[in-house]
Length: 510
Image (cartoon, rainbow, N blue to C red; front, side):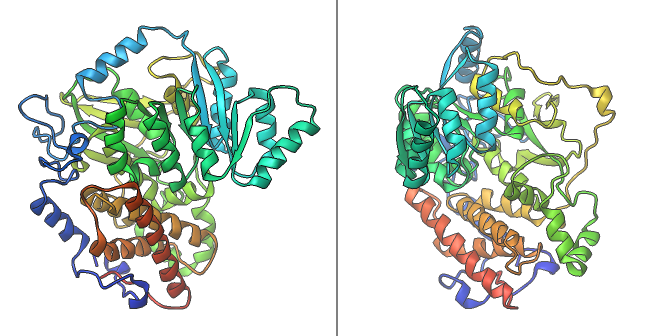
């Protein structure tokens, strides 16, 4: 295996889908880089049909980004509108239109954290935003309140029962506005993403369920305010060609990638040298590796309780645990690669406990540009729906004197093996990132459900899935069905392997 000695273990053969090649992930990365010039993840020239979005930068006609000065490993056409003359010109033209714009929004996940904070922005800037469509899970009470307030044209809930409850609540409340088209299920989410009048879709739902509606919106030429990580982490090979084909803007809505995006405004083509993602360090940032491992051994219950409590941000349980393992930062590395085109060698992570510097970029002259702000998710959200404008918002201004000091440290990759796993998956590319993401989601959920997993079992399960997937890895011509199939397989793998661990067995890392 490729993890440190603590993670060396054996996998039950029955937990595997089929016998796998006895090759480490790092060896596979080397083989992919040496043998396949078609891989978008090695940055080498490609002759494959999907080369347009993923090929390396051409020395002949482009100014070269990156620390090596060769463009190796960089994407020529990333998802976000950055790093090209055309995107710079587009940004300036949009900015010069002034802040009297009006955007029509379709909001996926309107009753969740992203959704409710986006609607707070709509409330603060009613002249700039109109809500055309909303989707949610089962919170019919809150959805009925949102319909009453925003009067969307289309509404979708997860089940027909929830959709009926919304209708019943509207009637019982005496709602006299126009009744929206009430839908449910995946088709309903797709309809919300595709509503004809909306020009920007905010993807505030989690998981692979966000992929298909995002694709539908892109194909209709709608801009994407991206809050769904799976769109690029799992679906990057599918999404990038569509972004180019349909000429849409993919605008990051999470704090780190929004910070990078904001720092890149005005940076010319070839001006970006390096991306620096900041991380809070999560629940165990103040413990050494040995202290954490000893705590896992001696008091696993205390570890479980602490792992789901974030020191800085008010987030959901899944993301909070991802922060504790630092897999959230690993996933953000992959997302940064797709959004901004940076090679994995030019994406760094630093721990910044105060969560005030949300990320940084280094330009070719070695200047560092950083975006600072309070830990408030509304800040990146407002920029994702108003880009490139700067709206006046009723938020507390940043006070550096109040903060006092800002500190930065390097993450310990032995303490946080999930960071390395994410880099490994990203460098391999293809369907491997979908397996990484799904395996992490499944392991994260099972740890929180208390089925008998330890905190240190999470990276073991993820690496086991990555190793087992190598026999079926697909690098070129990846389709949505491939992504969804790998997602489902990885979840099944982790479920079986978790059951083995819970019954006293061990996980295989081949």
